[in-house]
Length: 195
Image 1 (cartoon, rainbow, N blue to C red):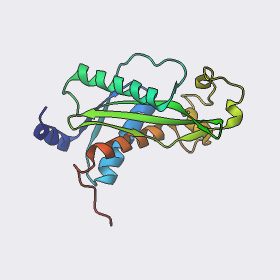
Image 2 (image 1 turned 90 degrees about the horizontal axis):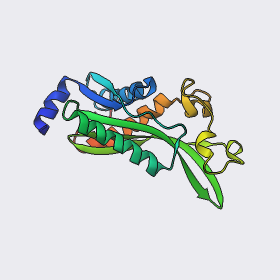
Image 3 (image 1 turned 180 degrees about the horizontal axis):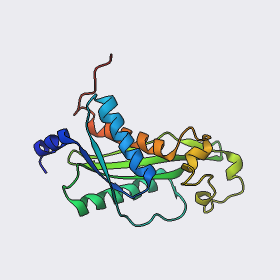
Image 4 (image 1 turned 180 degrees about the vertical axis):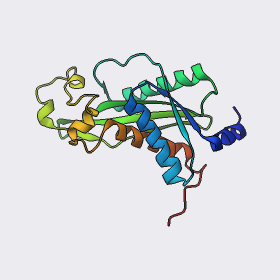
């Protein structure tokens, strides 16, 4: 697809292929696009988010930002290869655990990563990180950590559990999607003027 055709199609609305079919992924991606285009650029653009079948995720979370991004990127590339130029964007979004060793003590954080691909290239974005309380991680070895986190998908996920429902998986996906879009379009689309 050439860029002129891309910009013309974008004026009629944004079409996004998303790896997976869960509501929090689809709605989070949509929320990220709406925030970027409606709030950031002050453009009223319709956003169509289309779920795409992917191999089921393994039980437990990936451990390390590198693993999460690598997994999400692989899914986004596969979508783009399989679907060709049918959509403006191809997105995969995944949550994971990152550990930091600070002064000899491991600290664990949960965050979401989004990988976005399209004619303008590829960009990654992450949500903010929430620390897993040390008392929850005590006594677990590195193989048990991905299964020891609180929360369920139905109740809004780990982030919702840790924040008392004030943040949800949908919101972290929206933020990581917004961040990826901001990177992709930096210097390409002008944001609205400060009022």
